Length: 374
Image (cartoon, rainbow, N blue to C red; front, side, top):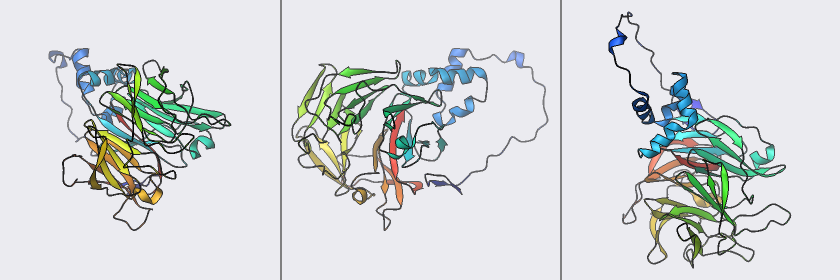
């Protein structure tokens, strides 16, 4: 058994080498070679979990990977392969998992200080960039991991550096909104920004209707939603969305009136699958789906994790392609020390959802979890 720092155990499978055979002469001159365009299209269809092998073939394949060209082609031909990035509390190691959690890969280490490692961090993806925002001794910073280069870089900083903000991924872009600025003022923001991985820069968006911290974000109906949170007065039950076509924010009153988030709890646990918004209520472990036409929520039953053990903190609730992903303390165990990974294909009309246990056990508190589709 191979036990790594995250506590995920897996059985090592042996890899057989090639059979010993006698070399044979061959006339390779009669075999037509593939042109580069066709060859590149074939390579783009190789699963991302196997891309590391291409680096060992030749310099051209390595150059294709580092240029990001393969990922652009994958987007053009409609390949959407999600993977999960996770980091535990108190460490600076990140791991990447395939959709089925059957393979894992350790990301390169990046040099930061103990403050960034041991304090709150937010993570989200934009295309093939994984962005991790946190606080170093000198202030709020962002580290980005570029999948094509398999390397970490520092920056770019947001226009208004912040923590405790909402974020959402839209294809190759990412949105952030709200949050809190640097001390000593610790201003609660109503500002929002959009990250472009092509230019590695942030663009300002119009201000929201409300100042918010501890809020959550998602992307649905081609709009960036920001839900719940708190302002200087107290808890917010309203939501709002940004419409890029009209370039304005639209308020949704009482969006969380039946699903309030208590002050001691994590921000709302929300995820979008098949353009439907789902919520995991930390106080009751109930899964709910948002009914857009009536601005209400419908209960779909309990999830197989105990989000109430830690009031929603340390629970990952994400969209994973056409599935919901939830990671937390297993309700099948007697305590909060055992954590598990579950997925399900949600159906708003189903009488009961079927959750599938991924064959992994987690021993540490998950601080960050982000899903990349590329």
